[in-house]
Image 1 (cartoon, rainbow, N blue to C red):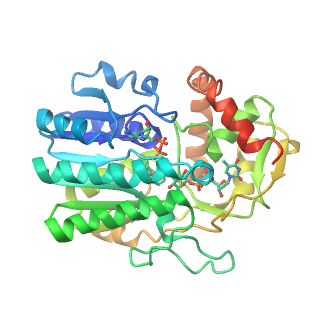
Image 2: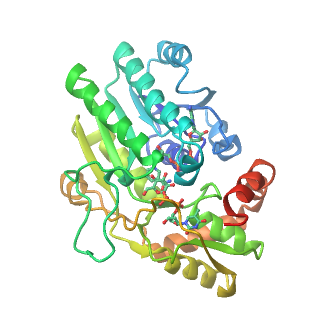
Length: 339
Ligand code: NAD
Ligand code: DAU
């Protein structure tokens, strides 16, 4: 079995590569990644020592390059993690989100049609459903919840999902889609909430909390997401969407306070800043379908996963220290200075 993993030098894709190499000793994995600001070859250092793994630098929007890769490698399965993934950046500059997330997905779908795969899997997000009100804790996203994206990021992911499903209906391509809630864990780029809290605290820098900090996210340890994707690839039905989430809703401010306590720092570092435009209030996944159909359930409790994650950032300081200089500093100033 040969699997293409796009976006494998990023947060979830890299965790997926390590997961699959350990779970399937007979699989070969090829990672295609453009190494944008969010991609990091150092993350794949250990994988690169494995004979069953190959890295190819390339852009999913480069049609000729993608077709040549498919022609040469003859993939059995393609899993698309490659994306512009940060909501705040999509508010600053939406164009690249459409190009990578929509057009790039279409290039991959065309390549899968032309060369044939037994499965194309699209890594999507719960954000395609928009948000839920804070005062209706009884409501959850199911696979039937209408698409109602809020940000240019989520709109681009929703566009990609519609294309993926259209390629199934129109061309019979064997596709699946997973829509997961917020992930956390090792190799998470430090512009996203949880790694940013850890990194700022370790530098005794303020933690910028948007609005009142009451917004709710449904956090899932990244390895639980990887296991869900593995299950969908092998047992999921073509043409289907599977929501992935572990009923672990938390207010942002409570996440911030928990990490502060974990690191023994002061809550004085919390700084409330201007809210994100269009900020989604609450995400909450109903995972009944993947639980009943595929037997998936999360294995890692938040209290354990967050400890493991904090420890990983303490043990791998060089990995993130190298990332938070240069371009990251420019981004950080643009995003937070005078906010
Ligand atoms: P990330 O930003 O950490 O990584 C994205 C990777 O894609 C990077 O390695 C980057 O170099 C690569 N990439 C970007 N544009 C590319 C292009 N044009 N061609 C090839 N490679 C390109 O993202 P992540 O957080 O790991 O998210 C991965 C996927 O999971 C995304 O599709 C995202 O929408 C989805 N998702 C993320 C979360 C989350 O909490 N992070 C939750 C649900 C779904
Ligand atoms: O739900 C899945 C989505 O989760 C994925 O599709 C996205 O790719 C991923 O980035 C994530 O999106 P969020 O916008 O939820 O993640 P982020 O870490 O950017 O923010 C989490 C929450 O924290 C959100 O309510 C905004 C808030 N926040 C974020 C940052 C960066 C702050 O309060 N301050 C900050 O500085």
